[in-house]
Length: 366
Image 1 (cartoon, one colour):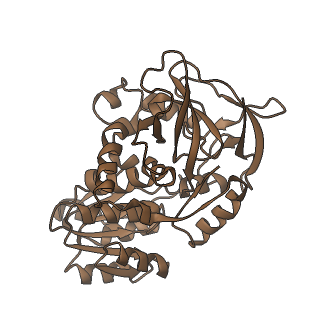
Image 2: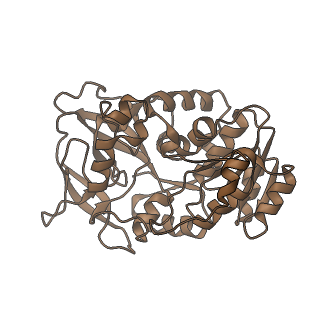
């Protein structure tokens, strides 16, 4: 079938919206009519080259839509099901999946590195016959997508696509970091560095978990203002003075600090802003060549914990329904993260707004 998709052909962009041929779903795969796809810094990092991916590639990894066809042996979904697509297609049988660490699925990670689907190969084709790669098993900046059914989670029919899409990355990564990786508990003092979609989702989850204090840190003033409206008790301008400010506000450091920026220097700040006995969680993706320098003695003498968190340490088919229930109960107001919607042809303008800090979470509605 024919579809339109936003293709990255060279580092630096821009994305080109092109007509593509899309193969029918293969074994264990489904064809999804895309309802909405979020613009995320993980896409931006592929565009600017800080995350090296094989090109050409149809970008977009945070999406929601409706199943319109199922491939041979695909039994998890029926035509008409509404689904959220997440960026780790968990096989369910490797040693990581078997131990409950589906975010670290080994075949899923290998497929994502190769730009293929979990079952192998690519389903897209350019007019010249070139097969562009899939982005993290989704390639949601398109009208239709073929994905492994292991990338999909069923959601209620009445969940608006532009909201549902955010559960595929921003909410899983941010809320998961707060609920699972940081294990925020009632009374905890929490700081969040970086107030994009992921950081604000972490803030919402920290509030839902009962944090007594939430300090929101960012260089952009309007994001700090939004964080205050969403439940932050304090806000701090990002920069050289941020550590001292957080430590002063929290009486010596926050119990749980979540860094979502993907900037190595900010991760160092987040660690220094954490109290003795506290936990620092990082979910951002720095450039692969970046390193961090930390006071090693503090890990032992202060019983500090530094943790990485990929996909919020979530299991999508367990956690997406839980998080949707919290949203419907009013405890996780994910819709507040939306900065607006845009057409597929306007995707480059959307990424310019994301890069400048103007927008939090935009979604393409094809």
